[in-house]
Amino acid sequence: MRALFKPVFLILAVATISLFAQTTTPTPATAVIDSPALAQPQPAPVIAAVLPPSPVLAPEKPIDSGDTAWVLMATALVFLMTAPGLALFYGGLVRRKNILSVLMQCMSLMFALSLLWVMFGYSLSFGPDIHGLIGSTAWFGLNHVSLTHPFRDAATGLSYAPTIPHALFMLYQMMFAVITPALIIGAYAERIRFAPFMLFSILWSFAVYYPVCHWMWGIGGFLGSMNTSGTGAVDFAGGIVVHITAGISALAAALFLGKRKGYPDKMSPPHNLPLAVIGAGLLWFGWFGFNAGSALGANGLAVSAMLTTHIAGATAGLTWAGLDWIINRKPTMLGAITGAVGGLATITPASGFVDLWGAIAIGILAGLIPFLFVMVLKPRLNLDDTLDAWGVHGVGGIIGSIAVGLFANPLINGRTGMIYGNSSLFVSQLKAVGIVAVYSLTVSFLLMKLVDKISPMRASDHEERVGLDLTQHKESAYTVID
Amino acid sequence: MKYIIAIIQPDRMDDVLDELTHQGIHLATVSEVMGRGRQKGISEVYRSHRESGGLLRKVKIEIAVNDEFLPAALAAVKKGGHTGHVGDGKVFVFDLEHVMRIRTGEEGPAAIG
Image (cartoon, one colour):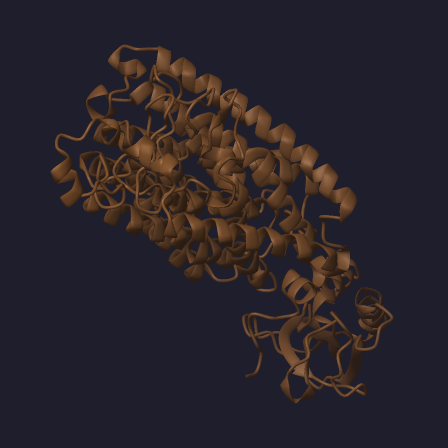
C-alpha cells in the first residue's frame, strides 16, 4: 500500500503542474483550433496594433454565458445524485448494520474516480480517437483542456459542446463517470469487502466505462453518432454508457458473489425507508441535471429533456405502485420509489429524442417490465441482486435505449424512430445495446475473477453476520442508548 | 414453568432463534440492549463496537417454557450462540409463577407456546 503512494503523488504533481501551465498560458494549439479567424490576414495594421487579437479575450466562437451557467448547475445536480442521492437511496434499503458501508462506498468512489477522471479517464473517453475504440492519452492530466474555450476537433470539425468551456464539459462528464460504478453497489451491497470493492471499481472504470463512453460519445467512437455522417446509435444522457454498463455488470456481480446469507427467507425489510425516499427524491432532482443538462445548453432541447424525464419518472412510479396495488394488495412506498427511479433510468437515453407521448409510453414500459423482473422473475431465478441494480438500471437502460429507436420524434432532435418511419436508428440501437451488454458482462466477470484472486471480494461469514459497518469501517450508524 | 433470559452476541441472534425453532420453542421476545461482563466492556477487535461507558451491544432473548422444555432451550441457546470468544454472553433461568394468554384467558402451562 505504501509503495503506491509515491507514484500516485508523482502523478498528482505532474498533473497539477500541467493544469497550472494550462491556466496561465493558453496553448497556441487550442487557440488556433478555436480561432480560425486569427489565421486570416488582418485588415489594417493600425487596428491590429490598437486591438491586438487575443485568443482569450476574443475567441472566434465565444462561450455562451447562459449555456455555461446551466451546465455548471447541471454538473452540481449530477454530483448530488451520487452523494447523497444514490447513497441514501441504497443506504436506507440495506439493513442497519450495513448503511455506513454503502455511504462510504459512494463517497469513496466520488473521491477516487474524480481524480482518476482528470488524470486518465477524460482523455481515454473523449480524447483524440484511436480506431473508434478508445481515446488517446493526449489529454492526460487535462493537458489541452481549456478552461475558457470550447473544444472543436480539428480533423472533423465536431465539437462536444460548442458554447461552453472544454473543462466544464469535462467536469460534467466526470459526475457521470463517478455515479456509474456507484450504481453497481446495488448488486453487491451487504456482502462485499471494501478494499476489493475499490480495486474493482477502478479497474472497471478503465476496462468498461472509459471504452464504452468513447464508443458512444467520443468523437469517432464506433457505435455512437459523434462522426461526420451523424449516423449511428444515440444515447442522450447515458442509457447505454451509464445504465446498461452498470446494470449488466451488476448482474455479473450478483451472479459472481452469490446470495447473501439467509436470502431470500430471512431478509429484513429496508431498515430506514424514509431515508431511501429522501434519496430517491434527491436522485430525481439530480436527474434534471443528468438529462436536461445533457443538452449542454440552456435551450429548448433542455426543456424538452426535463419534461420527458419528469413525466417518465412520474408515469413509471404510478405504474409500479398500481401493479403493487393490484398484485400485492397495497401500493407500497418502496415500490413507488423503485418505479420512479426505474422510469428515470429508462427515459435517460431517450430524454432528448422523444416527445411527451414517447415519454409516457416509455414510463409505462419502465414501470411494467422492471416490475416483472424484480417481483416475478428474480425470486424464481433465486438471484440476489440486493437493491435491484440489474432489475431496475440494467433492464431500464436496455428498454430505454431500444425505445429511442421506436419513439424518437424527428422534430425534437433530428433523429427518427420506427413509428415515424425509419428503422435504421432502431437497428443501430439494438446493435449498440447488444455489443455493450455482452462486453460489460464478460469484462466485469473477468475483472471480478482477477480481483478475487488478489483479495477475496466476498465478505467472510463472520463479517457478513456482524455487518460491514463494523467489520470494514469500525463504525456503527446508530447507537442503542445514547 | 421457567423463564429464561439469554444475553447473546447480536450476530448470533438468528442462529439462536433457529435452534429454538428446531426444538419446537417458538415463544421468544427479543430486545437490543447494552451491557458488560467480566471483560468490563473491552471489545475484541471487530467482535463488537466499543461504546462509551464501556458497554457493549448485545441482544437479549426472553423465553418462557414448560419445565420439560428447559434442557432443550438451554441446548439451543448454547448451540446457536456459541463462538468460543469472550463476550458470548450468559443465560439466566427463573421459576415462572404464572402465565396468562390474553386472547383466550388460558392460564398456566397451557398458555405457553
